[in-house]
Each structure stands twice: as structure tokens, then as C-alpha cells.
Image (cartoon, rainbow, N blue to C red; front, side):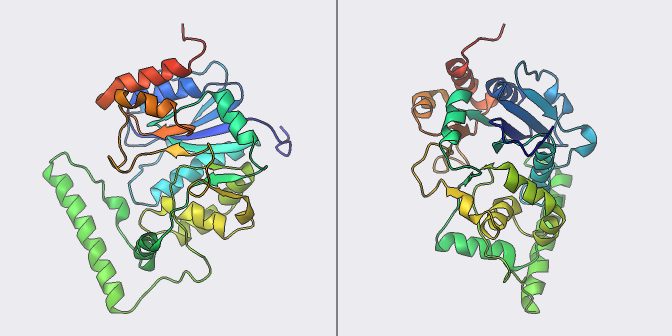
Length: 313
């Protein structure tokens, strides 16, 4: 296949951890001849999560078991997971857009509406939300000024098991001691070559920029190692400091219908419920997160029914 040929196809790169019901609904709503789906299941999750996943119109590409990784919140594994998916997508086809979403997301519009919205944008746009302000600047400075080790040893589990509590406490304590030692000796990481930026990791990017990230994988993993929550920093920083800067569409600054509807005021983020159905479908947003079949299965069913033109047999 000649990847130099521009297509109107989109790629959906999905990172999933749990909730097979929500994931199956997501795959069903993304299943379209204009889409290919790339799915990475967290290594900690039950691999049977993919047993009932099927597509009838689009391609479904599940990252094989040997490439799955143990994804830890706040660690470099988040970045590795994204790069694995981007690499799979750019090696498969030249997509108009590559969307990074989670297994707890759902579209709020039909695939025809989503494709139409992106076709209205300038070619090769990179659509993402930047976080700005003094508070964000200080937050980024804290996360990047020092080397934060042992992030991958924290699981942030709340299951009450003593061994897990000890492991998390030890990793957090060791990390803080390391940072205190770095402060004591006056060590600071040098970021003078990059203007650091931060924002939501859930983005819609061009194949060209995704290829750029894949080509610079070694640099990215080395440069952003030891950064807290690098998944919220690396992509925005790489984009802002690259030749692709002029292709940025910052949805936090523009009134356009390519944003993801995420509510940080009622949760971390808030889990949508059936009572929110009208708010969701009347939104200009194309996607929303997060959903949970354990907390409210009905909202998943209502959105699926609303968007499904041809019911599943």
C-alpha cells in the first residue's frame, strides 16, 4: 500500500484497562468502513477483555500479548503505550486523523458527523487541548524540574492488602527522598532546549505528526523519563517545539466541535450517568469520557441506541 496517498480513513487508537461492556459498545460505535481500530489492553487486565470484540465494516487490530505492557498511572509506561499504538497505526496506513481515546470513552456523534467535522479543518491539523495559566506552569515545573524515580513501582491500589500498601508507600517515600537529595545538591533537569507544554493526553493528530513521534521514540523515552505524568506533557511539548507547530488547533481556545466532553468539576473525571443523556447528545463535542457499566450501564445503552442506525442482529 502506498502510504503517501492521502485517504479519508481515520484510525482510533484505544488504551483499555477494564470494563468489557463499555469497550464492546465503543468498538461497535466505531465500526465503520472509514475507520480502523487499534486496541492495546493493559497487561494487568484480563486478556479475555477482547473475546467478544468484533467488527463488520472496519478493521480491528489488537496489539498482541507479547507487546502489551503494564501501564502505571503517572509513569513512562503511559507514553510507551501511546507510541505502541501510533506505531501500529502509521505502519498500517496513511490516515487523515489518528484519534487517541480510552476504553472508557464513547462517541457522541455518528461516524459520518465525526468525519465531516474533521474534513472541515485545515489539512494535517493536530487537534488537542493545551492547559495554560500560572497554576499549570508551576505544576509542569514541579513534574519536570527533578528526576522522579520509582513511578512505575506505584500501583495506586486501594484493595487494603498490606503488601500493596507497603509497596506503594515505599515507592512514594523513596521518590520523595530522591527529590529532596536532588534539591539539596542543587540539581535541576535542563529543559532549555524545549518549551514545556501540558494538556489532555486524549488527542486527534495527523499521520505525519504520529510518524514524527514514532521516529523520535528513543529520544522521547529518554527525555521524559522520570517526569511525573509524562503522557500529559510529552506530546504537547514535542508538537509545540516541532515543525508541526503551525498545525495546532487548540480546542481549549477555539469554539469548534472537535473537543472531548470531560467533566473535571464533578469527578476525577466525572462518570457520566443516564440523567446526563440530554446534556451529552446535545453537546457539540464528538467524544466523551468517562463511562462505566458498573456505575451506570443505562447511559452506555442509551448512547449506543441513539447512534446505532442499523441494530446489531
